[in-house]
Image (cartoon, rainbow, N blue to C red; front, side, top):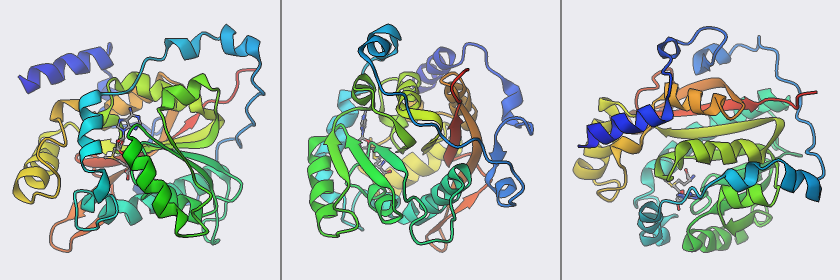
Length: 314
Ligand SMILES: C[S@@+](CC[C@H](N)C(=O)[O-])C[C@H]1O[C@@H](n2cnc3c(N)ncnc32)[C@H](O)[C@@H]1O
């Protein structure tokens, strides 16, 4: 049943599957390990968004075609455990544990993209960053400490309240602007950001393609988009669902629906259609012996992708 739904979903997502992406060529994305050497030419620096005019708002037609990303059942699951965001032993323990690893990927990808010094204390100074589906703010806070001007949005009101209260306790994070809203609502408001980040959210939204359209619309031309998620593989089923939810009980049962997962190749294709070209991907790999997460080339369970938004067509 789940497999049939999953197949239907794939057909919907990928009208013309491209199996060449299973082993990407040098013209598509590169793996994390290829990206460490400083040999690449960074993309052009982002351009400021045009000042929106009533004509451009009503004329492009894009906003009105973006449907809601909300999946009410998923949102209810997160509302039920909102109080536990900052409990390091609670349901969000895996996110807390993988946080340093995903932050190191984001730091290195965004510094390369925006030509920032990754070794300075506040490399994201001057960047406008949005954390879409920010939960209790466990990523938004480190982004603010790295100097970014951060907006955090989430569909769950309680998450936003908890994130706001927590951020208040540190002057470096108290400037974070939290809002209970959706990406598509901000698209309607013509908001733009240098970097748009959505970690572990796409597997919970109603329509991943529409959600990615919104993320792309929020990204300035030549800006950056970062997404992390769980791959739709049997290994991910065994680890992210059977082990994490049923054996180790890290997460409440039913947190994840395997058929909602996307493979790395599917995510690349979906983003390509929204004018985001994926530049780099890494696996987020868990070592059960040490309890530590690390970046790897294994995209088969948890992975993170960074892409660049196309510049304006002249
Ligand atoms: C697994 S949590 C990830 C939280 C955070 N991004 C992180 O990785 O630490 C997913 C979050 O996405 C939020 N969410 C789910 N659907 C959403 C949507 N359509 N728009 C905005 N937020 C959404 C949930 O309320 C939840 O806080």
